[in-house]
Amino acid sequence: TTSAATVTITGAAGQIGYATVFRAAAGALLGSETPVRLRLLEIPEAVRAAEGVAMELLDGAMPLLESVDVFDDPTAAFDGAEVGLLIGARPRSKGMERADLLSANASIFSVQGRAINEAAAPAFRAVVVGNPANTNALIAASHAPDVPAERFTALTRLDHHRAEAQLAIACGVSVNDVDGVAIWGNHSTSQYVDLTRATVRGRPAEEVLLEHGHDRRWIDEFFIPKVAKRGAEIIEVRGGSSVASAAHATLRHIRTWLRGTPEGSWASMAVPSTGIHGVPEGVVCSFPVTCSQGRYTIVEPWAIADFSRARIDRSVAELLAEREAVEALDLLGPRA
Ligand code: NAI
Image 1 (cartoon, rainbow, N blue to C red):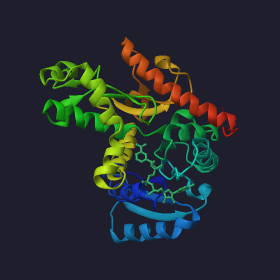
Image 2: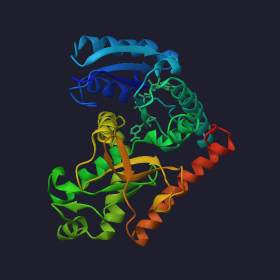
Image 3: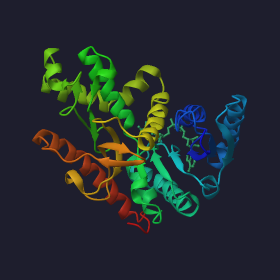
Image 4: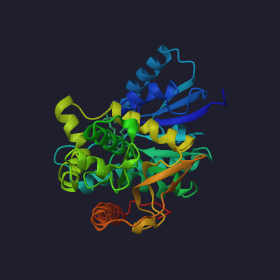
């Protein structure tokens, strides 16, 4: 075994938090060789519930779980954190305006950004899950000027997994046979689910889809909305939002970032744009990325087809509008 890693999980008493902490303590986040110290952050009203989660974690007698502590103070919660799973957020309540939602979350993520700046370990890396995830990551990064901005990422891995699964189903193969899907833009229904580089058993996915009677129109009118609206479909069928699949994607996001992508393959992560692919610098946008030795690299631009370009631009426009709304409310920190 290696030395223990410190992981801070926010919203730990919530649904995704509950599904995440057990697997993180069982090795699904950092591997079965790395013990973990879990630091759970909740709002005061939910601290008792988080303590209950901590009690259950103890009841697991989990060999890799070195410690579990509960906090309602962000600076204490992020003390020494090497990994942050930023799951807790303010949900949209009935009748809430978009600006109110942005500002409620901006106050959460600005406080957490400052706490991270003050207390986290130099190696700190974060994935923001709480929505609006991309913009929340932007806000947190803007309030943590001493932490490299690229360490603040947002979750689009669930969308990536959904695309892989639906592609496999449409082609009658296993998910192990599909590769190269990409999610671009915002974690919202404006996301662009890109199959132009996807493969099925090494062949272009669009070619294999055609053999199954699915043309580009089907991709546009059925496949892309199916993936983008899968969250709503889960709510309708399961009677509750995506929880276990979101927890799974969160764990995979960090694991891939730390452990790397397989040779010739990529994952989707929302990361601050370097200005690549025509996406304005600093916008936290989903891209296909390769990972190696704890670093991610946005894949090199390829000749993006016009229809893809328009889709990407539309989602990026939504991200820019979110950024402007936050700027207008004066909620960005010193980095911005
Ligand atoms: P939930 O409502 O069950 O849990 C959220 C928890 O966060 C609650 O326990 C709440 O007390 C806590 N919380 C709120 N403010 C906090 C703060 N300032 N500090 C610490 N904890 C705080 O919600 P659920 O189902 O666990 O979802 C969490 C978030 O993840 C939501 O914003 C949801 O929209 C988002 N989500 C994102 C996905 C993605 O792919 N990016 C997929 C699915 C959900």
